[in-house]
Length: 245
Image (cartoon, rainbow, N blue to C red; front, side, top):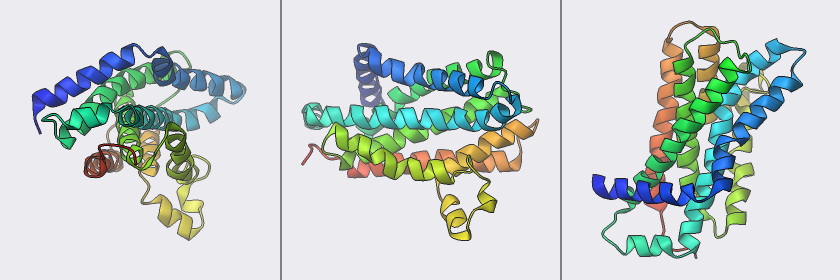
């Protein structure tokens, strides 16, 4: 990998996104609107919002980054841009790292806006540090970016890329512990949830919700989410194809 090529790729992606207001709105506005909606849905039961709000701060960035990254990467392939880039002295690792860096920068902005909104405007009550909450939200967004880059290699159109969401995201959403505690699930489902990264994203958020300092469980959950993101990025580089079949 070459640092200058990686940075050049990241800068090119950010320039393209700057001229795409719909994508910027999806990344920055939609998570905030969803948090607003949920806050007022539970206006009469603020404790319910406190219980699920922290988890949703991790889930929303993961979902939006997955959607945007998978579609943007596929668009590069179907337009022929990817083929032209890989014909240059640009390694697959440089390309994937450049995309991850560009979308990671957006993830920082997205996570900071959503976390600040939830804590200081919507009254989300957490015991732990807001910085730890932001850290997990950022790791979740990076995981969504990695998953989006990975699944884009298996889609032939933007419609197919969106179809991967029910297969990749929805099972994790159901089994992550948001709807019911994982330990109360049927043993087989609990076992499946134990290998899904979103489960540890939710667990990490819940640790910040309940504890004043960084616990061993929080460190474990954060490392698992970060490790899964790096693993999926590596798989994305290995499965990257020059063109869509």
